[in-house]
Each structure stands twice: as structure tokens, then as C-alpha cells.
Length: 473
Image 1 (cartoon, rainbow, N blue to C red):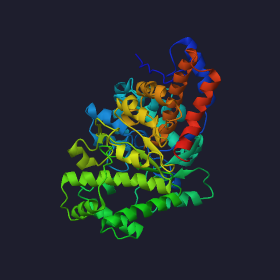
Image 2 (spheres, rainbow, N blue to C red; image 1 turned 180 degrees about the vertical axis):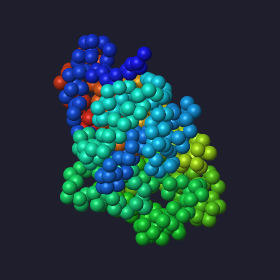
Image 3 (tube, helix red, strand yellow; image 1 turned 90 degrees about the vertical axis):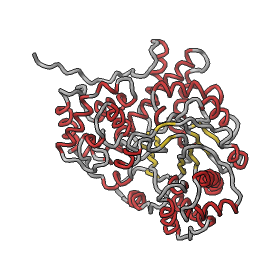
Image 4 (cartoon, rainbow, N blue to C red; image 1 turned 30 degrees about the vertical axis):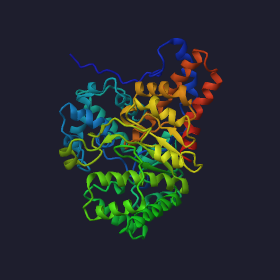
């Protein structure tokens, strides 16, 4: 008996409200923004991808290996990360096909997850796949996508244009010379906009074994002596200026907590010198990082870089995996996070400063209504970041809107953040957000809390104007 393959056909009303009346409103709203340009103010796509414009290698290296949302759940079901290509570089064709088989054979694992939504959208809407992935269809789907990847229409620049990306922000090391960004901007054949983002985390964590060497490199990049605490601060200021001169509009910060307790100058200098000598106690290193985060807010007031802060994740939770495969391989785990007292030193100094724009993200959704919305509801500098990472999912996004809207409305939120390394997932992620916000606003219209024209105006703002304004794009 021949095997019957289930079709892959994402429903046009997916994620819209189930109630027919509310769904009709949501459809009208969504249709107005469905094809609107994508503003991506925070992500992890390598600018060299667009500079080189080389064809993608194979389906697994494009859709599986770089996406830790995909690899972590496969790993939890017993698939070694090595079999998915993690940490291996370019894969031979046989290994790429095997990684693809691991995904397709376990397609059921992604039921109910946003990853299923993204992958279905990518396969059906970008690559014209019409059959659901499974063990039986894995080779056929692989061959179909691989054939598409040989076409010029599927090279990175062509897809950038097809996706309708208006602006794409990358995440960059403070020592990066940003040559890829400069070359891309100077290329007469390139018409898109890609901007860097200043990401200094590793240079603030003085307990890291590599920290002293990293700080020395920072000094070389800034042409500044980082042998003293004032020199370290000056090097940070210089590199931030360099980034701003090369198009950056924001600085991105991620630490285990959000505390910003100040140190006096003498104590900061003492701890800094001890850290350079490898003699700082763990608590002292944390204190130095918290103080320097406060300094980063001061710098944002002066140079205008938007300060985005997303604390509360234990990076590299499984040390053996971290040692073998490196960071961002799926085993970063959320922590409980406190913001109100943690940020008080920063906000008392700079919360009403006209130069500060502070966007707060969390993976602890209990903080949305308890802390983040009330902070954004008073401080003119504070915005509530969109659901991020583990909360970048339909139900969490719905809870986010319900949790923050009654306190701060829509104008004190950031607009959607895709935060992805998986280039082809960008349009699917933004589409998911647009559908969910259409549904939320449609419910307000159905309850006679908004008129439909107000709902549409709000939705257009959330999709484009909000992220442009908040991130100074």
C-alpha cells in the first residue's frame, strides 16, 4: 500500500482568534500590515552573509544547525548535537542529509511550539514545500530545498529583498573593526540597510578567565591604555563612538542580573586592578560589572546609543556541552529576575535624562506586570521590550499584551524583536507577531474598547514606527 504523505499547507487564519466575529476584524487588520517592511532592531545575522552573498550550502546548515530553538529540543529527545552539525563548520552532504533526517523523523516534537510555526512558514512560503516533513519525506524535502538553494533567487541578498527587510541590526563585538558593515555600505550593488550593535558583555565580566586578555584587546582597538580603571572606561567610550560613527544606534547588554549598584572611584579602581592580576574575589567581580552597567547608562545619555538590557539567563548551563560546542548551543536557562530595586540606582541618576532610552527585556514573565510595565509607566526613558527568547511564543506574547497594556498602553513597548541567527526565520517570526497583535487589537475592538481605525493605527505603529522610534532607526 503506498504511503500517503500529509500536505504542508499553513492555514491563512493561523494564530488569529477562534471567535468568527473577532477573527473577521483580525483578518482586516492583519491584511493591512501583512506585507509591511520588516524592521529588525536586534538579531544575530552575520553581516558577512550579505556582503559575500554566497549560496547557502545545504538545507540542514541553513534551517537546523544555526537555530538553537531547533537543536535544543532535538537534543532533549536524544539526538547528539554533533549529529545536527553544531560546532562542526560546513557539513559533508551525507552528514547534512543525516541531520535533516533527524529533524524530519522527530517533526512531531515541535507540535504546539513556535518553532513548528516558523519552520512550516519557511518551508511552505519560501521554498514552496508542499508535503509535511517526516521520516518518509525527508529525502524528498531535502532534495527540493537543496535544488532551490542553487538558484540565484535564494541567495542571501535576493532573500533579504524578498523578505521586505527595511533595516537589520546585527550584534557585534566592541573590538570588531566593522569592516564587513563598511564594505556592505560601500557596495553600489547593495541597497539594503544593515547596522551594527555594540555588545560589550564579555568585557564587563571580570571573573571570566579570558577577561584580562579581552580588556587588553579592547585597549588596542581603542588605542587606549586599559591598565587602569579610567583607561578601561575611556576605551569603552571610544569604541562606542566608533560604532555610532559606523551606523550603530544601540548597545546591547545581557547579564545574570540587572543590578546597577555604584562604586566610588577608588573602590572601582582597586577591584579593577585586582581583576587584571587575577586576584579579585567573585563578589568583587560582580560588583565591578554592576557598577560598569551603571556607567554604560551614563555613556548612553552622552552618545545616544539606545541601551537594551535583557538579564536573567544562566549561560552555558551544561558545562560539558559548553566546553565542547561553545556558547549559544541551546543550554542557556532562564533565572528569576528582579528589576525594581536592581535598576533604582540607574534610574535615579538617569531615568529622566532626555538622552537615555532604556529597553528592558525579560524571560521571567512574572516581571511584566509587576515591574517592567510600572517602570515604563513612569520613567520617560524606559520601554518594555517585546517577549524575547523563551517567551517568543504565541501564548506568551498574548500574556505580554494582557499584562502590560493596561498599565502602559502600546506606545511604551518596543515593537517586535526577532533575536535570531536563523536568517530565513525572520519573516516567519515577524508574521507571527503581526497575527497575534492583530488578534489582540481585534478583541479590543470587539469589546468596544477601541474603534477599528484606532486599532489599525496602533498595529501599523507596532510594526514599523514603534521599533524605528524606540531604537532611533
